[in-house]
Structure formats: structure tokens, C-alpha cells
Image (spheres, rainbow, N blue to C red):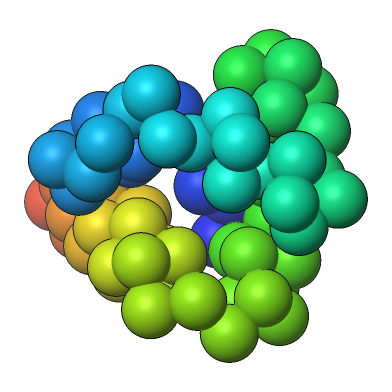
Length: 73
């Protein structure tokens, strides 16, 4: 399960100021997202193309981390 974090949002280079209203429009908790991230499937369910962009970055980050762990192990 992919967890999208604020770092993924920043890496996507999307408008950070627009994120809080976007979360509100979709009934998502901005503060919880800042604290613990959000399951990618919750964002995917919005159907928003920009959300899919952030999810792709989160998945790439997790794949890279998994690859690094495999090399270390």
C-alpha cells in the first residue's frame, strides 16, 4: 500500500497553496495528511489527474526505497 506524504506533494511541483483548499473540496483532512500522509487509494478515488501525478511520485519513491533495501540485504 502506497502512502503519499507531503514530501511527495512537494516533489510533484504542484501549487502548494492550492493543496489545502483541494483537500477541503474532497473532504480530506489536510492536517492528518501533514502528520501521517494518506493512502494513495484515497487520493486515487478522487479521480483527479493532479492527485494521480502525486501518487506516481510516491510509488516511484517507494520503489526506489525497496530497490535500495534489496541491494543492502
